[in-house]
Image (cartoon, rainbow, N blue to C red; front, side, top):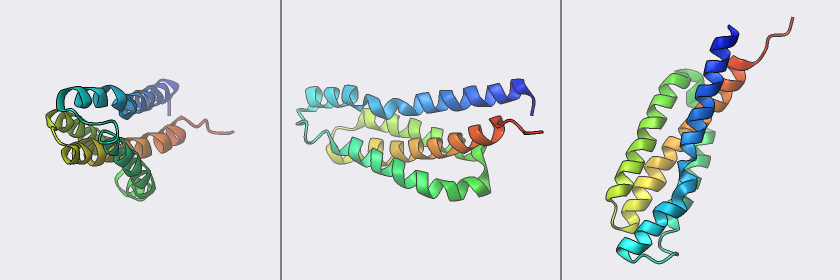
Length: 130
């Protein structure tokens, strides 16, 4: 693989990982729910907790799918799920809906993206030894 394509793949993987880090902005999203709907800090914690659990589960299960479907399909699905989860959490007014949208849908998207980018970056950007 040419150096320019290797760099492009690496930059794309870094960009996707950067955007998938949106789950770490939950404190900003949480504050809006606390202010708008009067949730307590304890009530606003389960969506992030569920998101982290989905990320772990999808990292484990995603490796099996990655070998069969490839990174492009996985990144497309993961990005769609992450975007859908973020859009749905914007309409959430209850804790269970936020857990479902941000925690399950968004967390699944982040987990799939994480699983798809890391092996792709390692595989495609590894230098061949002579």
